[in-house]
Length: 133
Image (tube, helix red, strand yellow):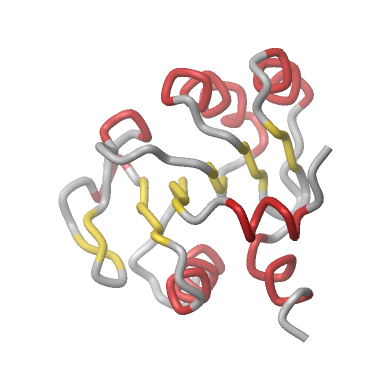
């Protein structure tokens, strides 16, 4: 299994599921940080499709993103992770990353059966910043 450092240094295109235009929300803080460090972040939120968050067009679903998404970064409740995992397989993502306090065994089983790396209960921003020093 790859370390979070390896993953974040190798993969730079991230679909951020559960993006918000409220810039005080954790998902927005993480998105801005990742953008600042050179990641291409595609916000995903069905209720905001077509709007912009931090300069990026919002997609309704991961499958609507035209570019190859490498990491799917999830800011949604654990019970939604199974459907997101199925979409990760469909789009050929490399990593399904569930944020802090998000865990789902079914999602793990789905992505690992399709050679997708599964990470749960970790924050992309916190993990990336560990390696800056």
